[in-house]
Length: 132
Image (cartoon, rainbow, N blue to C red; front, side, top):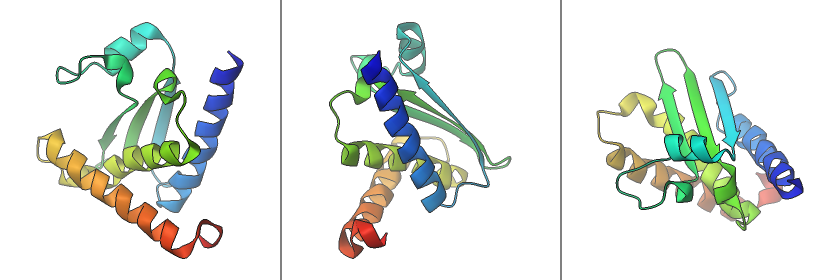
C-alpha cells in the first residue's frame, strides 16, 4: 500500500509538471489513478493486447468542450523509472492536444502522439532538464 501511495504521489507531480508545460491548464482534465482489478479490466481492455493489466493509460478527450479524462493503471507503472513515467504521462497528454484531428482510427493517432512525445523529450535532453 505504501508503494501504491508513493507511486500515486510521483505520478501526481509528473502530471502537474507536464500539464503546465504543455499548456493544458485551461482544459478540464480528470485524472483517474486506479489499482482496482475490475476497473483495470473494464478500462484497459483491448482486443489487440493479451492482458489488459499491461496497458498503462487510456485518454478520452473532447476538444469541443476542452474536457478530458486520463485513466492510469497504477499497478502497471510498477518498476518504471521516473523518466519512463514522464514520457508515459506526456504521451497521454499529447492525445488531448491532437484530439481535434482524430478521424476514427486510434492507431494513426498513437503514431503521431508517440512522435510528439519523442520530439518533446529530445528537446528537453538537448537543452538540459535544469533549463527546461
